[in-house]
Amino acid sequence: MSAPPPYGPTELLVIAKEPVPGRVKTRLCPPFTPAEAAELAAASLADTLRTALTLPARRRVLVLDGRPGPWVPPGIEVVPQCAGGLDERLAAAFAGCTGPALLVGMDTPQLTAPLLAPALAPDAWEGCDAWFGPAEDGGFWALGLARPDPGLLRGVPMSVPWTGAVQRRRLEEAALAVRDLPVLLDVDTAADAHTVAAAAPDGAFAEVLGRLTGAGVR
Image (cartoon, rainbow, N blue to C red):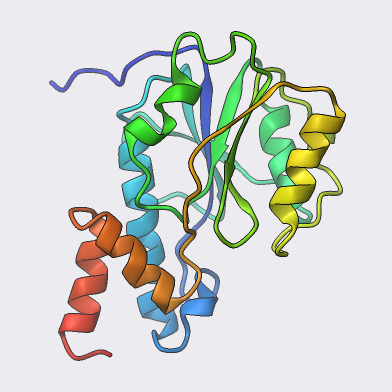
């Protein structure tokens, strides 16, 4: 039997969509087909969940838009996303937490345990109220709150170049002590996919991308 995932004081949330063709990673089409984009999304999510299982956490929760399948590994709880815009869905994910929580998305398969280690350490919340992981496109890939408050996310404009700036300003205006995580690149375009795969060449995402492109698909 394998050892149980390591325990820590923080709930780890992964917000994601079920990898269904036509519903995920649509900005990869073209050059990829909807089915190929969904395959890449599934690989990205698999890499993210695999990393989540190596991290110290009180709970590991997949906040899912869609239906779970056999691709959800043991040790990952699944809760459904609520209806509404992304800000409402993120707010609801935090509302379901009973203590410190850190949320990440499914678009950064290059995520590693060392990248998140500061926000999940036993002393992560000493003198810190929030952790913020900015994304290269102006959004954010991680958000941690010592005391989850859904109101900190509701009304933040999502999927625009200033999303991250507005969200971080919300934290500061609430007089929270904020610490930053490294900037990461989300996979939105085919160029992003190649850059991210090169940064994590041993992951499922890189394997799927290499198979699709190496087989003459592109």
